[in-house]
Length: 293
Image (cartoon, rainbow, N blue to C red):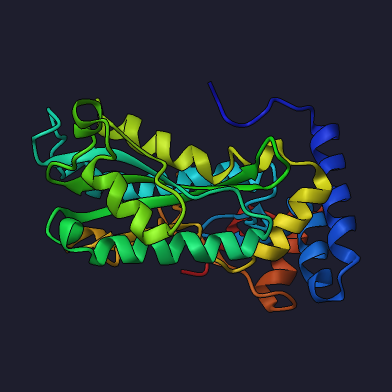
């Protein structure tokens, strides 16, 4: 099931307006409020060898009901190639990819909870038990309201690792080794979970859905608060050795299906911009005038 609720265009627009109105109350975020409210209403112009096209401007904010989905698709394209190169662990003792979720106790301070989650995970990586077991991975922070009204923080990982002890707890009645290590890092929480992976694509989709899953359940006022407290904070990150570091995605250049030329950005108020305005007017001039390559 899609993590994005099915809403009419009118309701989506109403959500955007209400969120931007909440942001405008803080003078530090007036610019971001305007950008959010204008999302999809303005256009950039591009040209190729035979014509012009218009592409709508997006805010690219995670709280935007439209851009949130677009961001997940972009991240999927960015990471799927690397994930597919990794072997899936076929048993609990096998080295390979598996899903890991780390949690801390609910926090009153949203930003402070994010800091604590990062710090606790960085401590876990440096623990002797995990130092050689965790090869690398991809993590997404999920933040949502708990039933007690406090902020609930998780990190959902795809990790490349060797065996991590989660089973001894059933036999000994005591915390397993991994739970013990996580408790030492957080100071008060030993809540975590490990799951098997059945497919590379399914695992990546599962983790990326948490970029928006907790956000869509918030009220518009809480979304504005979430945006301000997490603005320019990384909620998706990679760690480890090899391909998981510095993953870069080559930017896809749009190519005209007619002439095969890549589209180029048209600078406002330039000579090409005047030609574009004429092209999009009710009576555009002949196409021959736009061949300048």
